[in-house]
Image 1 (cartoon, rainbow, N blue to C red):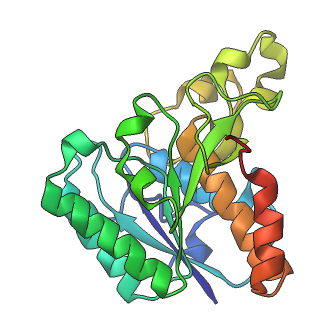
Image 2 (cartoon, rainbow, N blue to C red):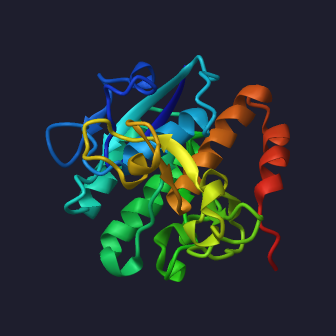
Image 3 (spheres, rainbow, N blue to C red):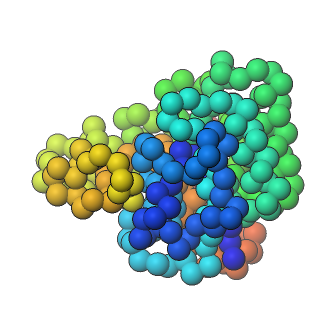
Amino acid sequence: MMKVAILDTGIDGYHDKLKTYINFSLSKSFVDDSIIDNSGHGTGVSGVIIYNELFIPEFKKLELIICKITNNIKFEIASFIEALEYAITLKVRIINLSLSIKKSNVTKKQKNQIEQLIRIAFGKNIIIVASTGNDNQEENIFKNSKDYIYLVTARDIEGNIASYSKEVKDAYSIFGGDIESIVDYTSIEQHLVVSTFPRYLKNDYFNLFGVPKGYSYFWGTSIATAKFTNVIIKTLIDYNERPMEIKKELNKYKDDLN
C-alpha cells in the first residue's frame, strides 16, 4: 500500500470518489477536531492526486493520510511543522505540500526545523512535492531545500508558464490550469482542472454553469503540485521503484534554466 500524506485544508471524507482512499484512523487535524474541509482546497488537491481529472480508479493500493493544517481562518507554522513531523513518523511514501511558506512568516528556529525535517524525510526515502513559482517565490523557504524535494511550477494549456506562476531554476513544471488563458468560454474545461469539491459547501461558482455538485474547476500552482504528485505515483508503480528509470521519467518535467 502506497501512503500519501496531504497537508492541506482537510477533505470531504464522505465524497463517493474519495472516501475509499482515506485512512481515517491515521488522518488527523492539527487545528481543530475534524478533517472536514471548509474551503474546498484540500478536497480538490486530493481528487487531482488520485484521478488527475480522469475519475477512473487506477490506483488500487493508494492510501491518503489527511493532515489538516488550516481551517481556512488561520495558518499556524507550528501546526504545519507538527503535521510534517507526523507524516514522516508514519513513513509515508509521498508528502504533498500544495502550499508555500514565506521567509517573513517564520522564525529562524521554525525555518531550521522545517529544513531539518525535509532532510530527515529525504534520508528516509520519503518524497516531498511542494509548490513554488507564485508571486514573491524568492521568499519561499522550500527553495532552500531544492536538493531534497520536488519544487513545482505551473503551465497553461499552451505549455507556457501560467500567468500566476514563474519559471524557477531546478523546478518541475506541469499543467495547472489558468483562467487568464481563456478566450473562448465554450472551451473552459480545456484551460482549467476539474476535481472533487465538498458536496456540503454552498454551490461553487462553476456549479451554476453545469458542473455537477461535488466537483469544480481549479487552477493554480497548488493544483500543478497535486498533478505532479499523481505523475510520481504512476512512475513509482510503472517502474517498480527503480531509481534511475524514475529519475529519467520525472526529469522530462524539469525546467531547463541556466
